Image (cartoon, rainbow, N blue to C red; front, side):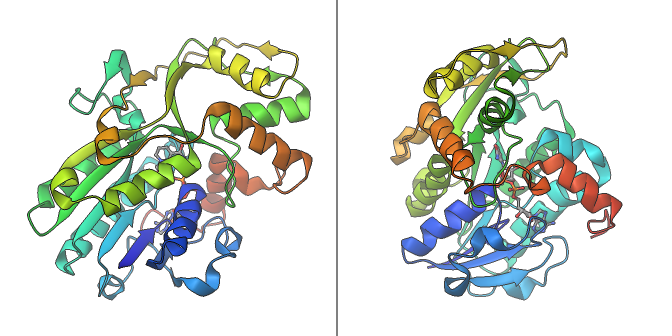
Length: 328
Ligand SMILES: NC(=O)c1ccc[n+]([C@@H]2O[C@H](COP(=O)([O-])OP(=O)(O)OC[C@H]3O[C@@H](n4cnc5c(N)ncnc54)[C@H](O)[C@@H]3O)[C@@H](O)[C@H]2O)c1
């Protein structure tokens, strides 16, 4: 089976691409490589690489492709706030274009990398039938993309959306701007965690290898069980103040945390029951994720001083250098 992954060199995409190669799929990585090509060096000779922008790439790239995993995006809230027009052009129009071209070229299966941040602020636990409440330009683009994509789903074009929790763990394209990874780095550098707010908000979490496997499960499921469906992908919901204790305990270190006064409106808890029906369950937990990041920092196999590990700072830099533009 030929699989095309847009954003296949990213934090999640590089892990997923490697897993798909290991499973014998023929993989095409379509990526602008905003964060470089090192993340896919272990599989470079085993995949087809298309260096291009989803907003402009030729439709021919989709010829002969059986399934598309639609991941390329400006990948978090702060980076998406930098330039709203840019986020809309990539995360909504570019990604919807990827869906349209897939259908036009006869691709059978299309999987969206969406986000639980689409739930925004909720009192109870949200499941896939709950009303969404996207609060940011990033979350709104995900909602718009889902609408566009599901409108094109039919018997011959299977569309599924995976709403991922906040991801943690090690990846060749490392991100130290994701909550668990950030906390581990703060302890490593400063001996304590610093939160901007009071830590009272809930977030769902999932390990990067587990979320990658959710794409594999969807890919390998019968179309009947996934077509037109949304699945939340996560392992646990936790308040951020609880998370500070969990991460410190996992590292067996003395607890120290400073809290701030910033108010974050985003606060959501999510049900992960539905995806179990297609055989997915998490294999990792926050303790293991925190420890693997800690070990990598200790043995210097990951570099926290690499400016690319903080997505918003790197995009700010790319925008200033005119390396990424609103008009593609
Ligand atoms: N990491 C998380 O916690 C998380 C949680 C929920 C959803 N998601 C979603 O999952 C997807 C992957 O996230 P990630 O953490 O791997 O992000 P990432 O930033 O590491 O990867 C995104 C990749 O997309 C590429 N890209 C960006 N714009 C592009 C364009 N216009 N054309 C082609 N390639 C482009 C980048 O070069 C990068 O390799 C994103 O859609 C993100 O919104 C991530």
